[in-house]
Image (cartoon, rainbow, N blue to C red):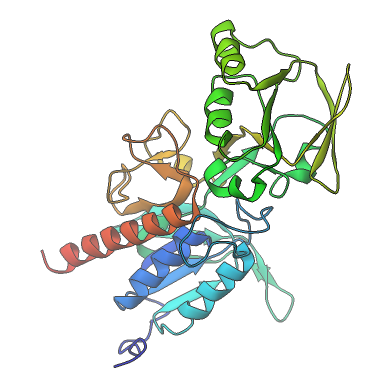
Length: 326
């Protein structure tokens, strides 16, 4: 037998979905695929907002290294279209509300063919959140337009493409040494840009010992150049770099964790167990919006997000199975 089998029980619009997956990135797409392959009635809601939207390519994903994120999502959507029990909607959920033994997922107003519109809602037995995080970059002039191309967060995702280049690490916290040392085998030379802040003496000594340059002057502006970017300082000469790594602050992209009262990690991500279960029965979470207590922070990787989506979907399917066959 080749390809997915057709659904033997088309979705009744008045019956609840088995699972509503909120989020159309790699975690949500994989979760919908996993549940669709088990013939679960699934609704995938995709708001069209993605954390890796600024990135030109995704990396460190076997068989998909160098794929544009939009191309990855399009290929996943095409695969989901083959599963009759999976419905994909390009719409943003606005609320998730407990409703009896399940939940009700509310959407914002959408205009109808006649021009009238109103809020929609869907009943579902379980909810799988894959809404991701929102990054807040340091307030350095010119950084935002470079983010996703010349500027990045993760050396594992974007370091190799800067092989042999002069790489800058922007920041003054303890992370700068770790990022610099991750990149020392890749870069031709490294410079830490503290943007006017003083480094802790021990940290400065470690960088000096490793031959990492430090520019303590305030960064006046970052400008795109043919080779990468030009860094202008309040004092001193400009510096040309091939790429810049920066630590971004992040927060939940969507309000559902707060609405549902989910237990959170100190990092700001949703607390889940190894199977993607949250503190609220029937609610699962996947992708970089959630992590277990075994990791100090979310693992921002397309491959890890997809894997967590599979795990959370398997867990949701298992819970539904237990309910149906106690």
